[in-house]
Image: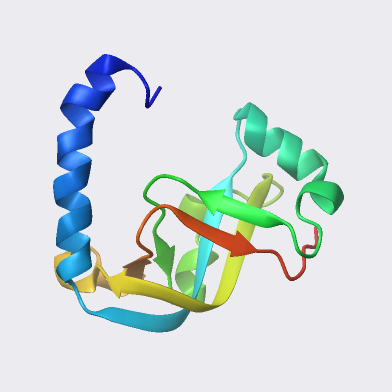
Length: 129
């Protein structure tokens, strides 16, 4: 819980430094995607099961933590990210994401990982299953 005093005391200062470092990196605008596996997360399950309502056109989707995206189609279709065939997951696609590239810092540069500065909110244009 982000309101937990222990979390505020120990994670808060790290996050401030991390955010300040991200602000120093050059920004870019790219087409990028993010896969999120539903698994046993109640909020994700509720959204997946009720996607027509929760992800209706004009609805907002927020990523309050650090949420990396990729610019590579091959990466987003990898089961490590989107899950096995038939596993419930979301693929978020953003045609004009303002972000920083993590490629120079990545152990797997081929992932073409980018990071919007958190928190970020997106407006849904369409959703399908």
